[in-house]
Image (cartoon, rainbow, N blue to C red):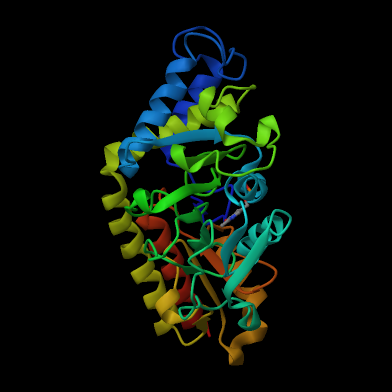
Length: 354
Ligand SMILES: *Cc1c(COP(=O)(O)O)cnc(C)c1O
C-alpha cells in the first residue's frame, strides 16, 4: 500500500478517483467520455453549475461573490490580481517563494509595499509586526506556505480588503469570505487534479481600475460567461465536482479542520519526540498542511537512508523542497489518518534501528 504525501498534484479521495475514472469511459450515461464531450452540451453545464453551488455552500460564501474555474493555475492569478484590483497601490506580505512571485507581478501595475518578509530566515516564520497602509487597494498574503510549512490560519485584520492565495489550504478550515476581495489557488493541492485555478471574486470590487484589461485576463469576462468564455478544463472541473461532493458528505470544512489538526498534532508530536528529527518551521506558525522536518544535526548523514527506508514502507513524496531540504509530508484534506500513522511507525522503527 502506498501513502501519498505529494505536495501537488496530490492525494485525492479514492472515491473521487474512481468516479472520475468511470466518467472517462462513460460520462453521466451519455455513452461518451468526459474527455470528449462538449463543454456546451446540456450534460456538462450541470457539472459547472453544481460545482459552483457546492463551492459556495461549503465555504459559506456570501451573496455578491462569483466562483470561477480558470486555466493557468495559481501563477496566472499572480498577474490577474493586480490587473483587476491594483489601481495605485497594493500591500503584500512576503512569506515564501509563492508570495514573492505574486508580489513581483504586482510591481508591474503600481506601487507595491512589502509590509514584512521572513526571507532572511528562509521563511521559517510568519512576520507578525507590520502595518498595512490604509490607502492600499488590497492586502495580499499566502495563507499556507507549501514549501516552508508555515501557515496563517486566520482571516487577518486589515484596514483594506484582503486577497489571498489559498492554493494549499483551501477547504481545510472555515473562512470569513466577506473580508476578502478575492481568494484563489491552484486546484491540484487540495481539490482536484492539475489544470486549473479556482477564484472567488467579490463582484463589486471589480471595475475600479483605469487600465484596459485584456479580455482573457479580465475577471468580468469569466463572470459574465460562467467560466465558459472559452473552453474550460472540463475534466478537472468534473473531478473538482466529485471532490466537492465528497467534502460535503464528510461534514465540510469544520470536519476537515478537525482532521487536519489531528493529523498535524500526531505528526509534529512524533517529530518533536523522536531524537533523530527536528521540525524546520517556527512552532507557532506550523502548517497543518505541509509538515517539514530534517534530520537532527548528529544524524545528518542518515538522510538518504531514512528516505529509502520510508520509500520501502510505501511512503511517497516525502522529499522536502530543494530550497529547504529534508522531508515534507503534505497532509491535505484527502489524506487518511492511516497514512500519518504509517509514517510515524516508520519514523519510530528507524529510530529503533539506530
Ligand atoms: C503550488 C502553489 C502555487 C503555484 O500553483 P500553479 O497552479 O502551479 O501555478 C502558488 N501558490 C501556492 C501557495 C502553491 O502552493
